[in-house]
Structure formats: C-alpha cells, structure tokens
Length: 73
Image (tube, rainbow, N blue to C red; front, side):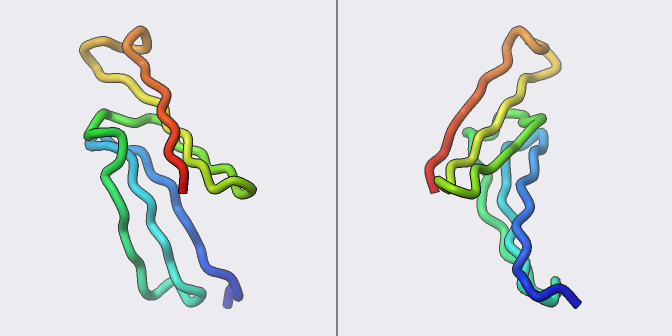
C-alpha cells in the first residue's frame, strides 16, 4: 500500500484538471477545468514552485494554434 498521496495532472478536450488522491487511492478530489476550456494535450507540474504548465491546441487550428499556459499554485 502506498504511503504518499497522489496528484494526477490531466489534459482533456475540455481543459486541464488536477486530481488529488489520498494515500489509499480511495478518495479523490477534482479541481478544474483550467485553461478556459481549451483542449489540452500536455500538463506538467513543477514540484518546487507548485506551478502547473499546460499546452494544447484544437483540431481546427492544429499545432499552429497551440497555447502554453502557466498557473501558480
């Protein structure tokens, strides 16, 4: 059984979400959506500063329409 909590950073077509799980992985909380509902392909977190970086783009604009956003914890 794990002895630390888990944080998942998830990118979806409706934005970025943060899922926090307890040490037993039985109780979860969901925060978001972030990035104003943009489709997000990649989400990464900085464990030192708590900043969350997300990047994405839509099917219409493709990679040329990619946006990178930063959220401070």
